[in-house]
Structure formats: structure tokens, C-alpha cells
Length: 114
Length: 114
Image (cartoon, rainbow over all chains, first blue to last red; front, side, top):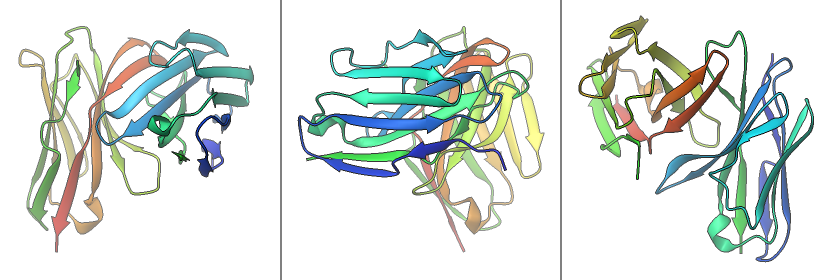
């Protein structure tokens, strides 16, 4: 049963600490997306990659957020330093050829910054 | 500025009746549209899609209608079932096959009353 996995599922941290969220896309998918869900904005696209290369990260606050794909099986989203306003659920999704333009979402990481 | 809007944050419908969820978009370049369903503590799951070359797509109890001139799409669920109670997101995208960038709406919470 192919699915996107994300770790950790929950993270509570204090303001100023570094947070790293991880995502394993579905094997064979070549695009990976990071979204943030907030009550006011719904699902916001933060960044996305195709074949591990960043295509668009215009949705991310550049001074504190960074996204990478060290290899085809791992995508990371890092926040340093974290702030209370970063509290949200962060979703990773993957897609690619043969998926009919659909994106498959992971279960999300719920981040709370105190 | 929200390019994709779901103006009804919530909707309640009696079991067996029709649920109609609406979505408006502003960018005429969008050419592929998706609907996702999201249960609490889970990632969004794909429901149904429609290409801009069509005005209707049907899958079982779910039908999506697209009105390009009005930049409006709607999701019809008939008959509605209690298990349909969830948050529904519409998404509008541009791109090429396998690499679509989507903008999501803020979601509509559907409650189907037994």
C-alpha cells in the first residue's frame, strides 16, 4: 500500500528552536510539495520539487524556512529559528507521471511552537 | 489575495439529500481542478478532478461541474451520507502532465446529519 509518510506526527518546541520535518514520497513519484494548513489560509503551498530540484519556494519565509531533497526518498522542511506563528499542520504531498495530476498527501506534522 | 475561494466555511445537510460545495477562482490560466476530502488528523485524500476542457465529471455519488466563464466549480454529492462529513478543499492548478502546481481554497466543512 503505497503512501506518503511524514515524521514526526507531532512536535512541540519552544520559540527559537530548530525544527526539522521529514517526508518520504511514494516510490516513483518525482514531484514533492510542502503545504501548511492554518485556519485562516487553508492549505498554503510553501515549496515544491521536481526530480529533487526546487521549482518554487515563493511561499516560504526565506529567512527562517528551508526545504531540501537530499535524495529521491527524503524531503525535509526546516524552520530555524521557530516562532509561535509557525504553529500549524505541515503536509507533504507527492505526485508525478502516471498520477493524472493528482497529489497524494501524507498524514501531516502538527507543529506547536510555544 | 486568494486566487481560490470557498466562501462557505461550513454546510449542514440532511442524510440522503444533495450537498453542493462551491469554489470560485480568479486566474483564467488554471486548467485542472481537484477536490479533496479531509478527515481530522489525516491528510487530504483525492476525491475527483476535472480538466478545463470538460464541464462535468462524475464518479459515483460525486459530480464536479466547471463553469469556465464564471470561473466557478462545484461539487455535488448525492445522496449525502454521514461518512461524507469532512472538510472539502477545492484546488486549481496550472502545469504540465505530472507536475501541476495547485492553489487550494480554505475549505468547507460539511456535516451530514443522520
